[in-house]
Amino acid sequence: MRKPSNKTKIIAIASLTLLIVLAIPIINAQTAAITFDPTSAAQYDSVTVEGTGFAATTAVGIGFGAEVTVTDEVHDIPEPSGYGPFTAIVNHYPIKPGSFSFHCDVSDVTSDYYDDYGNGTLNTTSIYAVDPFVNYVTGEFGRSTNSPWDGYTVVFYANYTYYEYGVTPAAGVTTDPSGSFTASVTVPNVLGDYTLTAVDDQGNFATSTQTLEVIPEGLTFGVMMLLSSVAVVVGSHYLWNRSRKREK
Image (cartoon, rainbow, N blue to C red; front, side, top):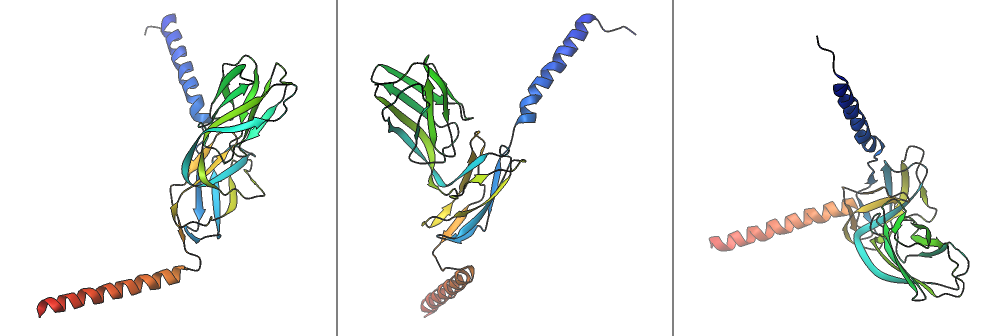
């Protein structure tokens, strides 16, 4: 039996190494998911939301409804001095991870752009920027600088996607060491079918696969069943009368 050549051994080792490297992202990848109960509620009712697969012991924001896009939302940085950090908070949050960017204008002298990596950090070509960031849960974003901003006029222009309603409890939501959480959210004053989305400050997020039916206040399940029964009876009676008229 021929022994494998050195070339064959090298190829085998290289192939094994490549497989291990390719497997690392799969091993480290997290799949976030959320569910809620009940699936039908009235305005201002509480709904229990459960999440799994998020980052461990980190803050979570909960959004309600469709995605909404914002462009060039203006945030003035009043009387900046020193090296920062200089921060602002967007008007709506939580923010959809990966959707955020902002433009930093410093007295019309420098104009820098920042794009979201999807993990809370931002990419930029600025040679002056230090630690640009965005917090998807709180809506805070900003940067520091290696050149003092004393006496300058600074404006941030934010672009991002949020959800129709932010329903994160005032006390906040934090995942446990396994990346799970349970929270009670209050249904907004709306009617119809809606989805819920949960995001954490490291960019993990999940949108519910089920929809929450928001019904008028006081319209309980029993009342809904009664109304449905009445509708069936009325409809049947109408069809029966029509059929009688045709027979005459």
